[in-house]
Length: 161
Image (cartoon, rainbow, N blue to C red):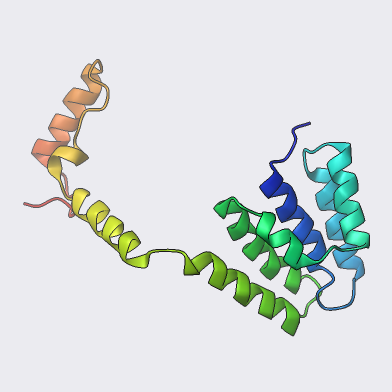
């Protein structure tokens, strides 16, 4: 058994708390929670923590700040959507949590920097030298294949003519 990072453990604890946002627990939600807890490759102690959180949820506001790894926060946002719809109704409290988490996660992103990176990747993808770079200098096959492809340019519309 591997032990979860603190961030990931608090992410799963928050997931167990999400079920209680709409004030009711359906059999489908109970089944999902138990199956998920049993399927996670975690210690018995961590499974007991998650089960206890499902039965008696801690305050969500105390858990979220302890989710420090950005992918864990993004996964929690996804899980709010999944678990919120599990009972067939995306309750107003679940929508509010989704919106606040989305703002928290997306609010710290520098979209202009991301856009510049994407534009640079796009421009680099048209560079013949980068596209046909030989990554394995000892591979005669790769050298011959990429040189032939570069010189023949068999319908690759992306490369400049």
